[in-house]
Amino acid sequence: MAKRDAVTASQGGGADDRLIDLTRRLAAVAAELGLSEIEVESAGTRLRVQRTVAPVAPVVQAMPVTVASTPATTVEPAIVADVAAPSTITVEAPMVGTFYRASGPTADPFVREGDVVKEGQILCIIEAMKLMNEIESKAAGRIVKILVENGQPVEYGQPLFLVEPPR
Image 1 (cartoon, rainbow, N blue to C red):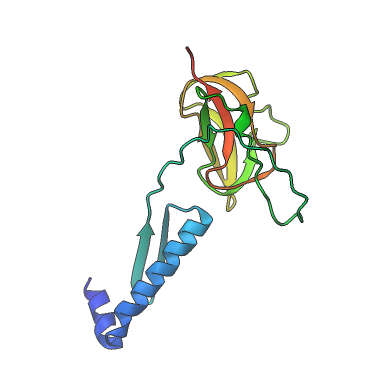
Image 2: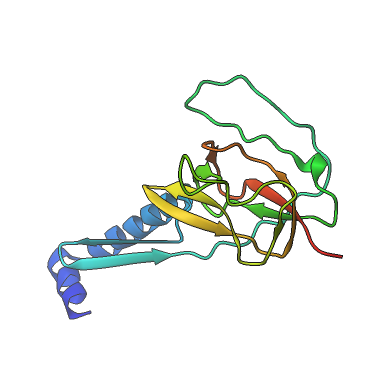
């Protein structure tokens, strides 16, 4: 804390304004990239921004599936809510990245449609910034539908799987 006070005193009152501006910019970058935490250190000053992400409620009303012809650089996720029965649980992407059904190109998929899964069982991997993030089932049940193709980019909150809980 003494180091920050010394920086503030040497730079005048504008240092606090610069820190506030930097904090806002870091928060915007974290939100844009789907990060829950970001930390920067420069000139002896360390700034860490953490945010909590509210869970996204599953979509249960029927909506038409849209398929648009777009350039390869943009991705429009198709909404497939008409398949979701009110009793199914939607597993969404917790981050932006690339969806993989298996741990490697020649490995068997973690799950297939119709498989029975336990809560906490690995369903897929999302690669984000060269890190492989295992995505686990948030409920026990049967995989009703896999909504994303292997190797496709996914957005934060995009539905990945529909899980039917046991009766």
